[in-house]
Length: 172
Image 1 (cartoon, one colour):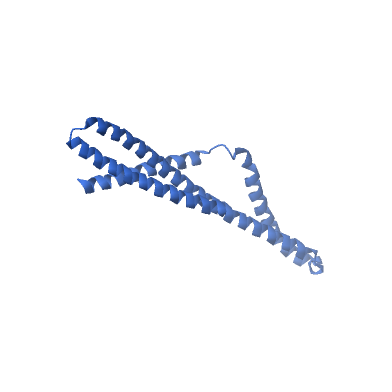
Image 2 (cartoon, one colour):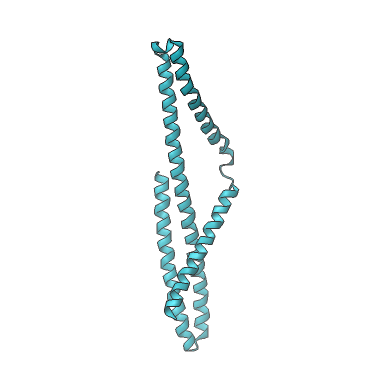
């Protein structure tokens, strides 16, 4: 859960930084308008280059913010799955201990406990297999991961455009 909290915290910081860059780009746009009025084209060119750099940095920060938010969600999901697996394992352990009890030497009771224990053991084995089976591909991005990164980039671009358009409409 600490990973999720850290990812969310950093995501918010990056988003705030991106929004401050958006504010700076709005100031740059106003400066460009002013300098265009006075015919200072050299300054306008310089400011426009800075403006483009600021927009790109803001876009990348927003993109990274979305990716970190996704990582936080995934980390929380994994933590919850880990808790669920731990609970399953604990339940199976309790059932095994119960089977050692004298009462469970009675075949009917032993059969009833097995009816509960076996599906839980099977569920635990699926979870372990999925986790172990995926370790070899842990560092290679899946199609889903690449799609999420692409969506995060699209969201960042659209948020940046919306922020910039909203300000240009207000100043017009």
